[in-house]
Length: 133
Figure 1 (cartoon, helix red, strand yellow):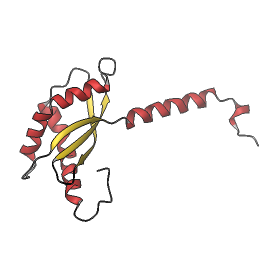
Figure 2 (cartoon, helix red, strand yellow):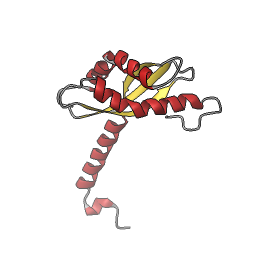
Figure 3 (cartoon, rainbow, N blue to C red):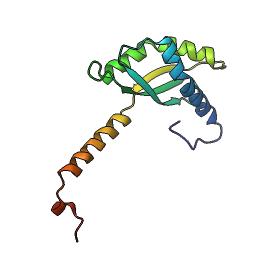
Figure 4 (cartoon, one colour):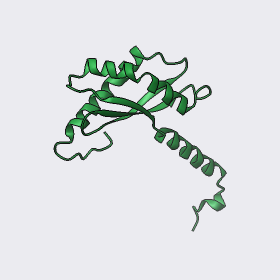
């Protein structure tokens, strides 16, 4: 999914990644008991060219006061056997990729940058704003 311009012959991993991305929310909802208040969003899936490995990128919403991103990553990776089994049940393939959950910092970084920009805008005075030549 992060490689939109895949060369010929490399499109199957992208199709498989898209299928996994489509199925994962339902798989997590039905087969992984998340701790109370914790919500996980799947942001991307990358499948290796030989289809043997899938990196599943996620963001965390809620539960920040109780869980670190590393704890959530460890929790999800402890459930990867059940997730892989469900992927195997839903996707028709000879070989099913081993999965690994990886915390995607993009959303958290974007929120932090937005907060910093907001602080800069609030602290800016008209003289320092640069609106006048």
